[in-house]
Length: 329
Image (cartoon, rainbow, N blue to C red; front, side, top):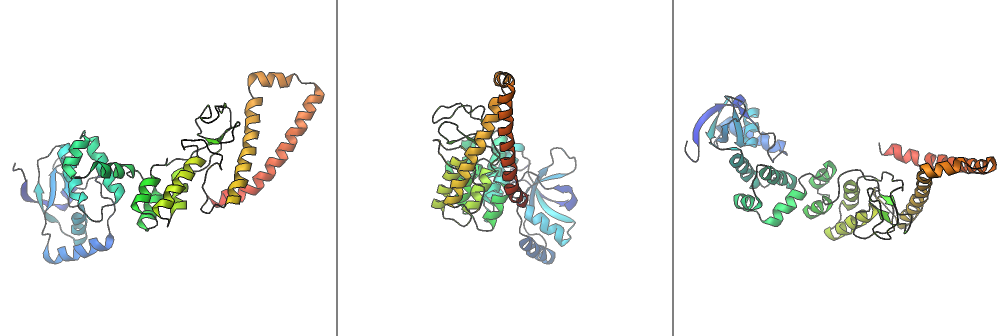
């Protein structure tokens, strides 16, 4: 087969769009306009395909996903195609190279393209040679390949810049439960058994879910300049125990508007709740539980009274936070 493929025709139902192809966002109005043109003049630029690797008699679409959609909308049954003889690695490179030059290719789509090429075994040097992209561009796009759904929406709404998207995607896109160090009262990671700052034991400190750091930072960063986004990302890192240094701040920053007063109150509440959790962890240790069980009846009575006080206080706290929790569901 010729290097550039063989020009022939194929039935539309024989052409299988690639599920993992980088470009996933298609503008409906643009496709509609293209379908009108195709309905009047036919498809002037053939689709590029190869024999499907797993479905006999079918074609794997390599280039022309937007054109195929327009052809389907225009009601075409047969379309011109160029059939290429390519293995998986070469096919992936062609698909991505075709998409890379589209002006409307989104950053995470470009990143997924680089991901797909890397998964075929291509080295960074080979990817650079195939795409003409610099190492820094590839690294940035790979960083946003798995951007959260909210970040993607805010980017499309022009609430976030491309640089802001890269900065935010450096934060974990999972719900995290940072802990309050009982020694220095700084915020440490949920999996830390020892405070990196004061070396206090944090293995028994109770951790409370504090939200998704990527989502929290994204909400705070909407409409902000890149320099402001850098500051926000740093603050969120600190509040989830992800910063290089342990900082005394609030546990989590999942509110769109945060005042200094709110941070102060939240920090104090986090600290008090941490003390309750630490007490619970301490008293349930086998050696401590055994010692408490040997208290006199008078001592046990005092502990029970204190527990009742704690229980009533926690019920009041629960009443205060329950409406806020429901509003987030």
